[in-house]
Image (cartoon, rainbow, N blue to C red; front, side, top):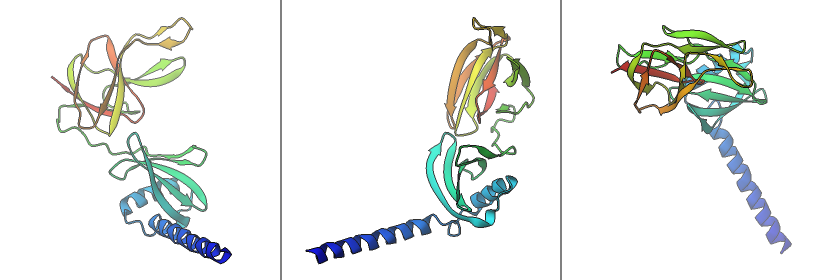
Length: 213
């Protein structure tokens, strides 16, 4: 009986080792064929002064709002990579969720309509203006009044239509009136109206096109 149990244990142990080796090979940095993604990850890590010659593994984990996420091991340390579907690396965080790299040169596909207004998060562009709320500057977009067809240029976008006027609320903080809160995914279209007293505020990583109707 003891010999039978020992045999079963040894077989189970061998199977476990084999499975671990297979998983390790599948997640191997060297064996990964996505050279575009790997190159972009290396650029991000090198900008943070991290030696990329010791990257050993890359593993796809659950997606974030805008695309795939990956776990990589470099010099024994874990990093989480946030990317787009086209392999652009948006940001990289360390094991403590500190952002060690943020891509300031993301290429966002413009709308097909050459007359469309393009609004990109954290970029002033032609319509952005820095407004101050409680000493902090935020970009809001002052586009001409009218009706617009809106599309998202990334996987998901969210934006607010707000009143231009900034006032103190009952707690003494600066705020503006929220007229509408709109979420839109790539491939969708929505219609909005902007009047002379309203503007647009984008949430993080949102990029939209607006075509006047």
